[in-house]
Structure formats: structure tokens, C-alpha cells
Image (cartoon, rainbow over all chains, first blue to last red; front, side, top):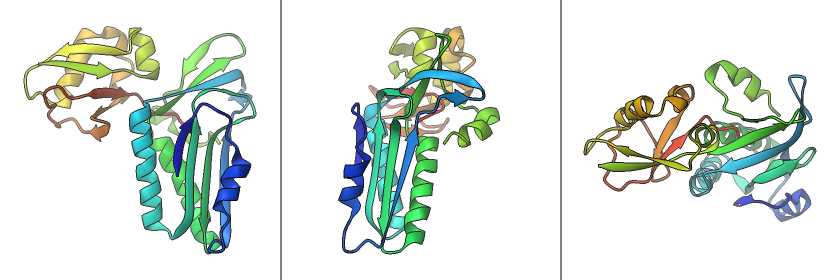
Length: 147
Length: 81
């Protein structure tokens, strides 16, 4: 299941949906908004998307993960609009009969999402300035350490 | 032909608009579109080498020809998650 939402992500209900007699392992990843980036203070974050294409790319990720691993559940939810500090901007649930597939799929899904899904983060810094975040090859190391 | 290019995030902020119209030869490629935008929109030059383009919500490469009336989008480096 994939979803873009402007509402807070209810990770408890996402987890509840992943419980099944066929699942022996459920992995939940939450990306949450952090106060400090390289020592600079964030006031809040905004996320924007090319929604039509983001939905398609997320659906592709789900399909590819289900092809690579035997998953009993695969959920990707991304929040758009303002995501206040400490709240979740993204949730991934991967469930499978055994833990290895669930861990691997969860890791792969968040990495692939950050590489190809057309969603962008805008930092609203504590000093009142704003920046769209566009990781370039030089900045990639930094971006991959994001969460 | 006239190609309308959707802009997002930093690209939209640099231009101050949601989309730009580019007049380009029929059957032109994404690479040619990129060169046109480079010449006509100096404000996009810092970001332009890093952006991808999508036609009808599918990423494409530099030698992809642009169909008539296609929906083209300029996709700056993504930062979801």
C-alpha cells in the first residue's frame, strides 16, 4: 500500500495492518524531522511533491520490493506539507515470514525512495530563512546520512 | 513546437513560476530542451546541470525525443524521506 498524505502518520495503525498469521517479522522505519542539521537549527520542515509521479514511483518501489522479497505486507506512506519537529515525514512497513527479508526490504525501500521519488524537503531555519534541499553529487554523503 | 515544463521546489522558486513555456523544434530531445532552458533562463543555471526530466511522469534521458503536447517536468535532485 502506498500513500501521500497531509495528515500526521499513524504508525500504530500501519503496524496493526501488517500483523498477520503469515508474518513472522514486521519492520517499521520512521523518518522523523530533526532539530539540528550540521549544527544549524530547524524551526520546521515542509515537503512538496510532483504528486502524480511520486505516487507512480512509490507504487513501482512497492512492486519491485514485492518481486525481490517475499513480503506479506509492504507499506510506504509519505507526509506532505508542514511536518513539525519530531513528527514522522515517512513510514515504511515491511513484513515477511522471516526477519531477514523484512529488514532488507525496509532498508532498500527507504534508500530507493530517497534516490528517485519526486518529493522535496524545504528547511525552515530558526533564523527565519528557508532552503529547498537538493542534494548534488558532492553533498550526497551528507544526504545519505540524513536519517 | 511549444513545450510546457512543470517546475518544482528550488526550480520553481528560482523562476518564480509553476511552469515555463519553451519554443523548440519538432522532435527535439530532452538534451536540446535543457540547452534551450539554459540559454533562456539564466536564473536556473546553477540547478540545471543536476535536474532530471520526466515525460508523462516517467524519467527520461538526454536523447529521448519529446512528443507533441507531452507533459514535461523538471525534477531537481529529490530530498524526500
